[in-house]
Length: 503
Image 1: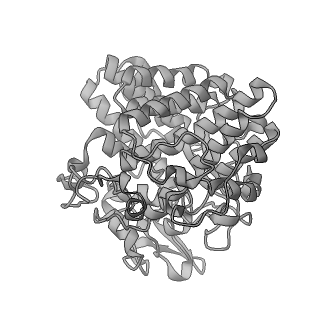
Image 2: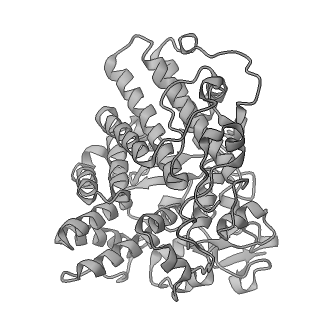
Image 3: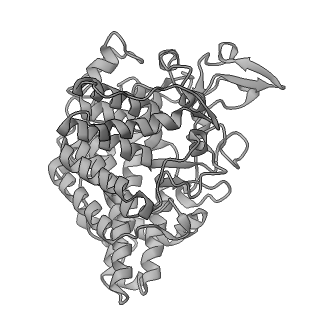
């Protein structure tokens, strides 16, 4: 959906309706949805604008995604010359003025504001109720998607589910509890599941389907420890995968090839970037690729988010996914140079977003990447984990993991014998460990690991344990499972107090 960036100008009229950081500004006028929305196409335009805001440097193009990478135990700071805001996230030293947080917080609310405007517009116009409900479902999906990130990162945050035509009306808004936000998230995803189509036109994976909404309902349930619901929702997607046209694709590498990424059947949701189609507000701007991969053969080994050597060495070389995930050699003047001879950081770098980034400005920046937000492989792993928690390691649960392992044995068409299938008879505890480890490898560097660490409560183990891949002795489980509310937001609106514990 490369044309999503063309909706930016319309969106700029909408997002001025709510952004906490703008509340000190002199309002230039009040927005009226009846003046902006006349047809269902206008509602769709607002929804498309929200996607453009998501596919931007301030959200999925660097600020949010890099924060999630560095917060986990799979990525460490490479070049220590990078700005301190990134290092502080990685080192559990961030404060309420951290520049990562103060950028993706307001961008998140701009996205929410856009879809709230679309929902308000849908209630004002005439049209097919089926068509309008489908657009409402899409808008509510996006809102739930953004809040699902916010609630896991910050805990209690303001919940806005209405069109803000006067910024002063939310200047003193208070935070909403985590439990209430999750209730709202589940309601939005459930509405989306009911009203979205089985498949989006032309096989696009940038817009959600019923299966996407169900997959997120499963993910939310898993996060909340509701394993029965997680299993039910995930299995519903799996049982109807032909209807939804979703499946594991044959070659794992193709998932991270920008020239092949449009319409991949494994993607239930992808965030789409397009080289050369940048808009106002950094729409379409991807800067994550060049700060995770090897950037420039003449300055090799320069990057920000780089796995530790422990991450690389602990991954079995026989696993094809390791080859896809890492670049441990680069060509300089046609000569292969091993990572031990890199000039800056002598560690293998992430290859997923930098090996086949399509068009770009020349160094991977402003790429054509489609970042996977939800893949069918994750749905299989959710089902396996949830079934194990409710019924133990059944043949069904084991079978889902083995589907993923079978794909991992396909080295670009050459079949190997590693990783082996999980065999029956494994204990519930051991199978739980197998699934979590499979998630770590299968979804490596895809912004999932931190959320797993948090929901499982294993921060002390992975950052302080003897087998830590990225030791951080200062990790504090009473503080570091949340980031602080941006101080500038609290300065504008003291009702956002109290600050998160420890900050």
